Amino acid sequence: MPCTTLLVGKNASYDGSTIMARNEDTPNGMFNVKKFVVVQPEDQPRHYKSVCSHIELELPDDPIRYTCVPDSVRQDGVWGEAGINAANVAMTATETITTNSRVLGADPYVVLQPAKGKPGESGYVPEVAGGIGEEDLVTIVLPYVKTAREGAKRLGSLLEKYGTYEPNAIGFCDGDEIWWLETIGGHHWIAKRVPDDCYVTMPNQLGIDEFDLIDAMGDQKNYMCSSDLREFIKDNHLNTNIDGDQDHFNPRDVFGSRSDLDHVYNTPRAWFMQRYLNPYDEDWDNPQALHTPESDDIPWSRSPERKISIEDVHYCMAGHYQSTIYDPYGPKGTKASRKLYRPIGINRTSELSILQIRPYAGESYRAIQWIAYGSIPYATLLPIYTNIDKSVDYIEGARAKVDTNYLYWQDRLIACMADAHFSSMEMDLSNYQLDTIAIGHNDVMRTDKLIEDKGLRDANMDDKQVRSILEEANEKLCARIKEKTDELLEKVTYSASMQMNNSFYLSDN
Image 1: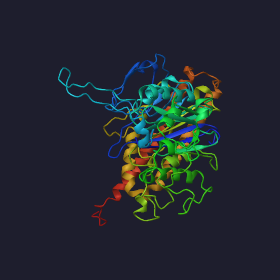
Image 2: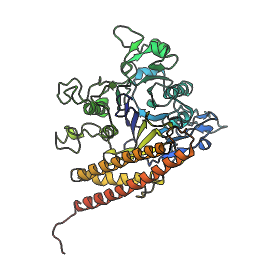
Image 3: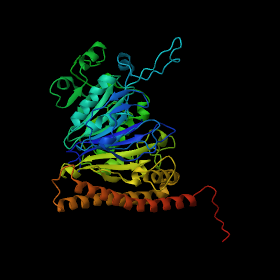
Image 4: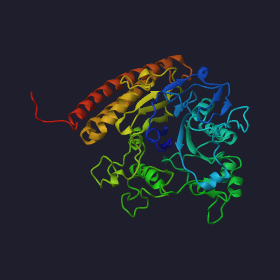
């Protein structure tokens, strides 16, 4: 899936949280209806079979509860995408990335090979299952890990055993660490701990730009990798270091891509996010700037100029090159420049999850999954507590049929009507987002205080009273957001109707 990811270390965030955000985007010409659900241990499969690759594997018999955002229509599998488990570990899977032909020549993807002919016929060749991929990863990893580091290790071991049929990057975080894992060919992988004082921008490219193989093969303080990575690099002549250093290298050069398509589709998104989060570090808009939208060396991680808030993350995830000549809605530049680069907040986003683990809150209520659906420039965020036993129909009940009782379809309709009239509706959209995200922050503060006033700050994850409070808070928040979204949908419908091309201003009344 084409997506965009932003990771924020605990010392780079506004409140000391670890934060992971990712737009789940679909390929051109389609979108998927999504829902937010809670998966209980008894509902987690023990035997798993992938729809896409047909791989089958046995899962451990001790899963823990977790949230995720799967497809509402399951003909292509689960596609859980993002969630937080009962150990307050978050996972986002996946950011589709890039690789190069040298890597794929050495370690090809493990792709499904359909059967040829029929059993009993001459020349019959049975089916060979493929590896694991985005469809599967949240389901087969998140319910079984207690830390972010464990998440990277479990996924790494599964990749080495079963392989993958696609290039993906996956994030894990707990209250202390964020780990970012990138697949290398069919069976290999690397992972790096996000520096606590940094953020990471990931736009559909292999992103990690420095790697310490000594640490990855030894103490694993900040790096991890597949067990034979050193031999894999050496035997296949992958290291491109001029100085011949085999232990420290840039994975983008060794494993990644450097294509013309990257400069249109990928690198501009990293440029935009870093331009916003570090506006004074560089002269971003000068043609001779250190980093332009088409630079191959935009850093993977960077220390921000100020602490990063939830609103900053939303702005980046809704990004369409605001205040630049590349903004498809803006007055600057030319018709050509405004369509030159792929936006972050694109039309085919299915959902955004911002996964926040707040270290200052009690264990039983510290995890929040901020949810948005559809094209993010038009969508608001709902902070949903994840230590719950049930979801809310407003964010879970959407199906293939259009129905404005659900946030997913409200967001879709608002976006498709407002897009053609963005400048006239921008104020209403901005006010809606300001009001509703403020409601979300206020709801979280009030709910936290209610729990603490009841003497439940130190309650464990299984405390039924806390879960009941969180579920009620989620229900009330969704009800308030629905009222605001109903109002916006009415405004957008009226405004778009008044601006239709078949309007005529001479009235017979």
